[in-house]
Image (tube, rainbow, N blue to C red):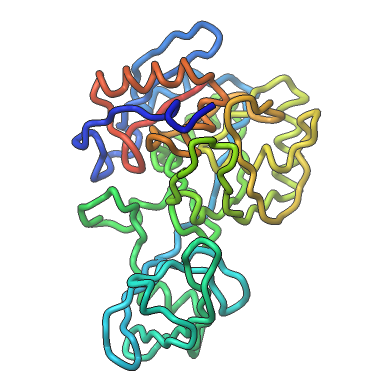
Length: 341
């Protein structure tokens, strides 16, 4: 397995800059692993492919307005800080631009002093650890001062920030959206439930790994960054009941896959709990819990493309991607969706 095995040609105009309206009007490519067949549908057709007793597992994380624009206290020079991971109550791992100016002891001011960050030191991936100082509630200040941290390949301004949240987002803490969930509407979830599909909520807060490229030709040498997950006892019990009843576990997004495969025993039993996971799933991995996947179309040479290739097979996924390009599907965060069965 080489990094170049996961490359493909993508015209820039196929990188979606805005979400479609309504959410479930996006296209849906259905990939059948057993036969290799590929269908082209609309996302609102999803219920046709799920059966009573199946379990749909969704990630209810909520994206923080994690992009902060500030200035150096001493010089007034502009600084940009992207919050990635909360280490302690007021200590965060971040990315800072320009990074060369963010030396230990540097103080960065946001919102005329409502929030001040002190650079503590570097991280092992070129980021910065920052301690924040403020009065009041940090989350409230962030809602007031922060901006939605859209991926770097989206160049147009998002008119409605809530469009970068899933309709079921509850748990504040992600640096990016679990984008496979952006296609769901409340009405579509109701239709699935009426069909007898059980919906189970888990949490994984999306971090730096979403943005970090694989830079080694041998992907097995790539180091994943850890992300925080939580699976409640109620969710674990419901998910295990689906498996015992003969239903399929359909993960919504690679974040749900990574969480389920982290907490599953070898026999597929899901254990409740919370912690940090750096699981890296690539071809050759044996799935313990996940049977099917709703996902978006991912960047070339990315860990996410490797994960879907592990589930569906490298050759089938690369054929599906070539067909998606030929059929002018929309790619990445605001793009169209794929259902792997």
